[in-house]
Amino acid sequence: MAQVRDNINIENAKIIFRNFKGEGSKYNRQGAKNFCVIIDDPEMAEELLRAGWNIRKLPARSEDEEEVYYLQVSVSFDNIPPKVFLITGKNKTMLDADTISTLDFAEIKNVDLIIRPYNWEIPGKDETKCGVKAYLKTMYVTIFEDEFAEKYSGFEGPDEPPF
Image (cartoon, rainbow, N blue to C red; front, side):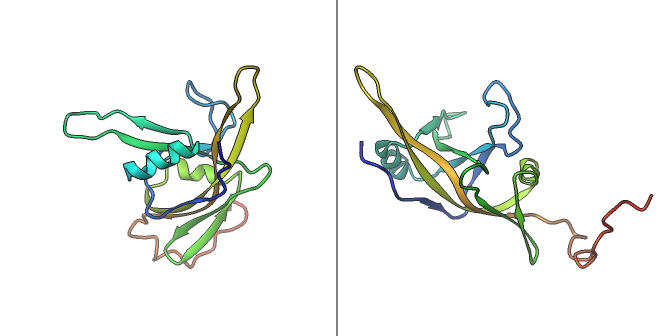
């Protein structure tokens, strides 16, 4: 299989199965931060699958729905940390390994992201297994703000609680 070198850029991305905290569960190893991104275009999904990306399908929940293609994206701050920005009003805040977990429960308005490939290979006696793992490179997350957010946006809080 040829090496994948091109990033995937998605504007107005829909993300599901958010686990930016890295909580362990039946479906996730403890400490593994990740999320899944919907691939709306079936042709793009098939092309990514042929290239070696781990594209999966969610079956339709009813006769009126179609199956949904998605890609799990790992969020690792170890080797090549991603650049993740939280956008609120006119403020842009860079998130790090400790603060990215706030996205797990955020009311997200928009996501633009870049996913970088990591080509992996496991040599075997009979055949070599290989594929492409998706890692987050860059992400801008705009959240919905409540009606008081702009009113209090200029206020800075104390470094320590007043009590």
